Length: 190
Image: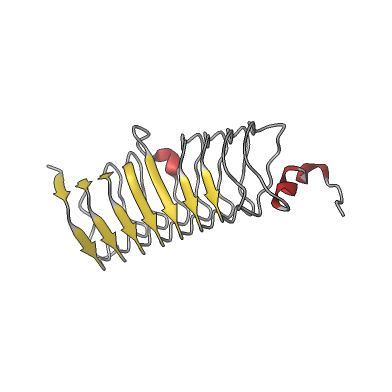
């Protein structure tokens, strides 16, 4: 079976739950209001693509390449980013919902998450060096043996991060959310 190559194309309002997504290489493509929910995107390559207003919830992304990809206003519940092709993995997220997604051991250096929900996301053993969480909801997110050195969480909220089991050197926090660094001590701060 030969893989398709698509470049410089805008794909709008497609429902890939009804007609299967064609696996191949997509370069400089824009996907607008497409439904990829529960679709199998395994082995697809997305190079400098944009996803705008798409639903990618529970999509299968095993060995999927995401290189310089932008997700804007997308619903991305339960994605398992650790199964992606790690070579060149780079993306940015804005105005999206990534609740219950997993970034276990994923290298996300200098990634931008802006105005997004990452409720109960799993960042266990991830490398978030210099990552920016701009106005992001991290309620219930798991940080365990995570590298958040030089990360910017000044406008993030809802997080609980234990500095004893995570690398936090030179990370940026602000009040009152920084109190999330003391959660494990179960103390009252007045």
